[in-house]
Length: 464
Image (cartoon, rainbow, N blue to C red):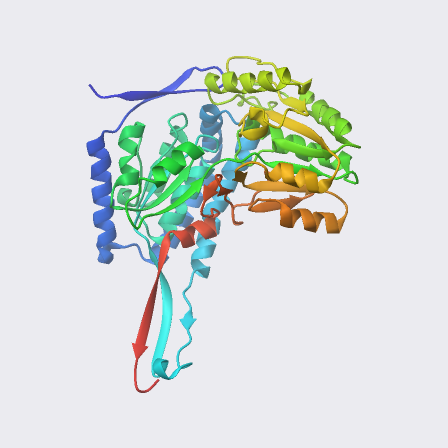
């Protein structure tokens, strides 16, 4: 009997669709066909063909934008207004890939600088790395699939993507649009399968590149199983720190912190989680942030008035509730929230001074919870911000240029925002974690480069 998976709407747990699961044999067949196509250079897509295909994909996404928004919001739980932004970003990301194909050139390598290199001319070019396996996450069902497939298509790599089992429908709809645009199926396929079968996408020697977005435990485990020579990009989470100096503009800052902390119910890898505020303003920051949190509308993501939707599963509400209760029992002040509203909705929550060894201070909560901590000295705040094995995006709020520059240098992060929240991102900037937060660098141009290999060509001639 064939196995299947039921996709549920996270808000009310109603079933949306049942999908058949693919078998290990079907996964193997996908890999075999993708690898065979990559080995046949005569059948590679030419650059101008890729440009045309990407342009057609972007046009079809624009045509079906409302449908993609509705589907993604329903299966993923992100509020409608935020999902509109996500889908527009996804379309723009395809356009960014087209632009970067025009920019993606090799370079001349100087010769004749030594006696041994005379009469030679050399240059480099980018070639596709091979078959790409992408394992995606639930929190951005459209944009993540775009980021994990479009760069591969753009540089000429066959790609197989496994979407999150909770949010596969947006991915499958995108695959249909790719087909409608004229992209042959062998160049990009989705696989809906259980983890045991999906591991073949990682361990198989025919896979040259793994793109993984998800938990650190799974990501590092998969990386250890890659075939020799295969590259990997791992995007895990962080515990994004924000440092607020006493001179910060609180009125301007609070809406940014609320957006960065409660956007998509905190289910974002760079969501604001730890706010280190100077002791002179910490109480005010916590109270004003709580005021904003209490005003947020929590509910059905398809309701245009909803600002915070559900967590992806009831189990995640259980975990968030347990972590918050642990912190409060250990001495944290519950400024607001702290209660579940339903099986999958949790109140936006602000905690003041949780213990530094509590889970909310040490691990990514991936829920609508922001912790505020008092500090006396900025260097102390930086040490505390850095005292976790994660480094992704961070922020500093201050009007003092020297404080901003010094903090930017000292924070262990791949990106530091000044007077903005930690979740800021545009899709052409480098984006990725360091330490346990990940490996490699995302962002459309950076992923395109990582999915290629450099080949150098050297000509020797007496006329040179």
